[in-house]
Length: 295
Image (cartoon, rainbow, N blue to C red; front, top):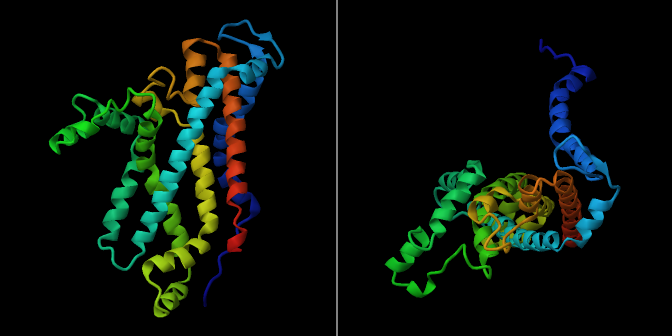
């Protein structure tokens, strides 16, 4: 006779969830409230804290360097969203095609950079970008393409592009896994019927797969936007905001204000500004994508 296991009590679920919830509150929610608290003071790290109400927020709105950093952040968000999500979608379609071989190998290679520290990725690319002994310019010389040799990290005209490339290539695998999981949930009968009707891999991907994973696509875009808004490690190692301030992003600006200039309360205010802008861009991307045409 088959035995049925007793149904767990509700408090058992709560007991297992408590450590996760506590860690999340301490590491994500509590710092937000602490930053909001400090943003109403003039504080440089000592014992003296002077209450200035919304003075820091007034200064933030007038801060040209903050808006310049926000503009740089926005450009990187656009590059990374198109690059990461777009390339991940193309790679996912290739991995479900019937012609591609060694699919497990390709998945492993593409996902591997996600597991590497952003600081390591930034350091490796800083060596590759080096004008004198970097791999990129080395291969350009080897191929006799000297006219394409550039000071990749020293020209403000294209520094945001060169700084975005390592970020794009590192996280393609993350969104590839998201798309592959969504594609796996599509009933196989639908794709088989499309194949019997004469659809090739491209037609199946565009007319069947993409509409059925469109919700996952929207989530991937929102995750990419919110994640790129807090980019810090890559820029710190690659350029430290240079040349000048042409690649300075919001998180790096907040870091420099807080720990280089010791304006901790204003640094907290910048962090709140990053949060607000991230929420606006994330909700804006969700509104922009809509999705009614696939309903």
